[in-house]
Image 1 (cartoon, one colour):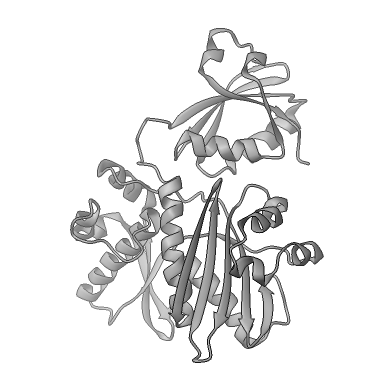
Image 2: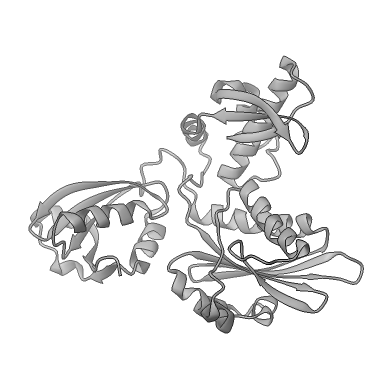
Length: 332
């Protein structure tokens, strides 16, 4: 669903809103957050935006007239595939965000879980959440318990000390990581120092000076685009869309259910199909929405799975299609 403002309830205004809404949705899917230029392969879709519309209703948006637009995401994704446009699917890995802000010398670690914040501190948290939501970036804030507070400080994120950020993030599993230190200048403008960690890669950004929403939004535009570049794939592209893995050490039905549920939570895994079961071993086919290497990175990082050497797999000729073997360790 997409929300956008509308001048009135006339058909012409609604048609313009539908076109804007589709452009916004395509931007979230492809990382084109600032809109599509005429040279973009998906630009032609805007002229027939209503073809992808499932329904709409008028509402209030920031106190003004707005419209909620419900699009058929599958048909949009299919057409983007026909136009060879790479898409980051809706099953997105959470992005762990370490957020610190300096309020007149008081440096605070922020989270959406905490209570007792000042109005100014809540504004920063809400700006982060709103700007991320508009770009389809699912944020995961840390617990902010004693371990988090001991592991990381404002100086670490402002200075972009990547190793410290990685170590503090280990307890949260395989989530990709964003860190930001925000500081307001004497003029009231904000500056931000950002680090994005994607696997072994890390990228540093500086944003501002400017208004809080702009400083956060400008950085998330760049960070979101890098995540799209990493995780997007052309819909319908058969290359790398399926792979087979073997899971060893399955003790019973409860393990099968838990194992399949956990695999379906991996970003880029659209479906888990059981191809063959023998005793405590299962050969699985994973249907993927982005490239195999990135899915394997996430599988290798799962604490429930232990990588096994492929020679330990014995399914006859079928074993030749297996790309990885794991031992199930259960939910630990």
